[in-house]
Image (cartoon, rainbow, N blue to C red; front, side):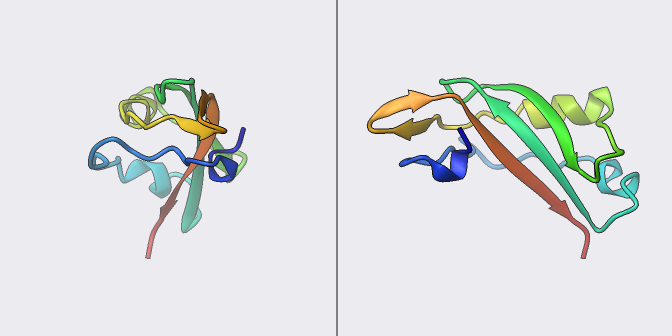
Length: 91
């Protein structure tokens, strides 16, 4: 399920770490979107770049993103696996 559509959306448990600047430097775009797959406990299982489509994450970038613990998505009081989008924008 898409996290934004849950009754209770997934949220980071603590302050987000400083993400490597290389994520958006390599993208060639001012916006890079990463989709994170969360299990029913809010633990990240996978992270992939959804935009721009030609870009992938380095192992270091992936580990930083996967280090973020989230609260689980809930629907009808039940925890669910979910997808969250992390957008990195250069201004």
